Image 1 (cartoon, rainbow, N blue to C red):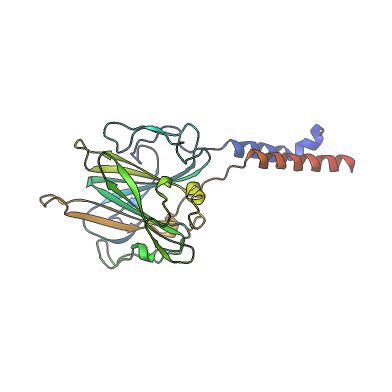
Image 2: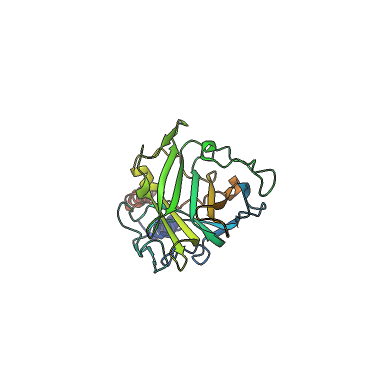
Length: 285
């Protein structure tokens, strides 16, 4: 094509090149500290301004969210007080280019478990309590929409490993744990205390594309997706095993960021071929 023929398509070509170059949104290893890693702060579990409070006691925690395409160099910077060892995030069934959703919590008190209920389709009936700290809100999995999953992170020997509990398929039927083993699509990184027991910060990573490869019947990600997070910890002065938690449901306005879809080289080749064809047609005309 001549320069005159290329010129009208130059902005589109440049845009396509920039789009193709877009990749992971994280420029450094994640640390398990969502605030330090620059994840988007959503709200505190005791602040009804940005959060639909479902139920709970005095436990409070900040909640963060992020999303990115997994890059070949993305990694986790594990330390002696982390719940998981450091290393590349591109390992096992996780592939470069996968769409990752990150959910983080940060608390001023000790926590020992966290549960995430993710409603990709946004059709759940989760609702707020009538007051902060009220017990009449709905945040249970049973109220989740079709294509939802629930996962809990439980402290074990030296790691907080996400464990599948149940999911609701696209027909709205709740399937128990083990029906589909999707633990490989979930990773959790907790910053443990000096005793290696409790934590104040945690980051969950959900590999959406790995869920699809596992034939997980989840709905599409969009600006309608939402989630519930529950976190609990020991109660001071009470015997071990006595915990107090808080559970919050996030509104449509505080939905998942949509992960940018990067075109494959084959797609870009087709775009280039189409532009070339248009140029040839113009020249013949």
